[in-house]
Length: 181
Picture 1 (cartoon, rainbow, N blue to C red):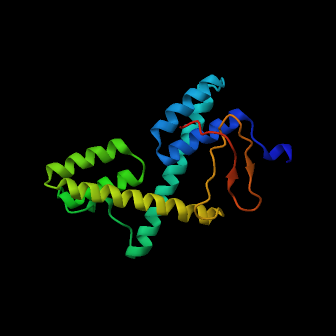
Picture 2: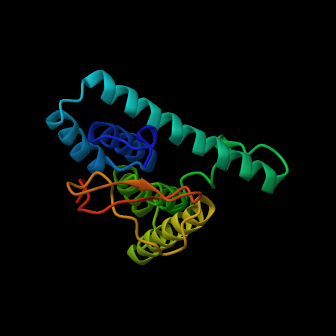
C-alpha cells in the first residue's frame, strides 16, 4: 500500500475521536480519549479532532434539514416542533435522541413523556422505533458509502489492526478488538 494512503496509530485514534463525535458516542469518546493520552496525542490535536467531528455532525444535521425541506416543499420550522409538551411530542424527541445515540437526552425526553402521560409501553415502542431507524440508517449509509449491507467492519483502532481502504468502495477494513468495547 502506498505510504501516503496508510494511517499510523495516532492518526487512526484522531479519526476515531472525530467519528465518535459524529456518532454522538460519549463512551467511545471517553475510551478513545484515554487511548489518545496513552499514545501521547496532545490535547490540541484531540481538540481539533473533536471539532472536526462536531463539524461533521453539524453538516449531517444540515443535510437532513435540507431533506426535510425538500419533503415539505419549504424550510421546516424547528420551533414548530410537535404539539407542545404532549406525550407524543416527547416520544418524538425521545426517539430522535435515541436514534442519534444521545442517551442522556433520550432519558430526559423519556421522563418528559412520562410526565406528559405516556405509558411505559409507549416509551418502549419509541425506543424500539429509534433502534430500528438507527440500524436501518446505518445500513443505508453503508450502502451509499459502498459497503454491502450487513458487512461487519471491525474498528481499525484495535491493537492488531491494519486498516486498509477498500479500493473504490469507501469502506475501511481492519482486525482486532475495538477500543470502544
